[in-house]
Image (cartoon, rainbow, N blue to C red; front, side):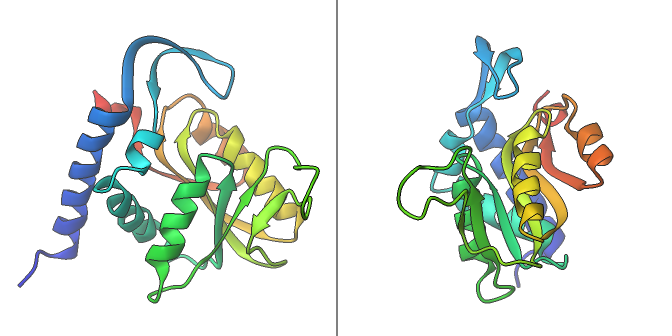
Length: 187
């Protein structure tokens, strides 16, 4: 007989945390964040998201965070959310099939010239994702784009919250926020 689900999830969290610490947490540098802030540490989450052990852990853990929610669609701002959304779309099948989308930071100027690519329909209930959250601005941009399409934002989720204002900003916007890890988990 296998492990109980709670133990299995705790083990997955422990394993993913170790991978993030080893592959993605860069310390003692000088980094400029998307928010424009300066920091002496940085989470380079692409190093974790594209890791063959970490990718299914991320998919399982994030899917666990939304499978009980009334969500039709998942998405986020390019580029950080794109691999996460792809992993979750694949993981959701067939248990709770979720459509996915991403929001471009700027319209391409060619092709379909859409700001939102993927599958997002008017009226969808949406969860937005980020790899790392500082202020929450990237997830808020994705949420605003989805809301402009007549969608409801159910929640925002990130793999790591840097604890630099996102919780308060999401609260002010009326969006539930559910990070998988926070900076405290890396102490």
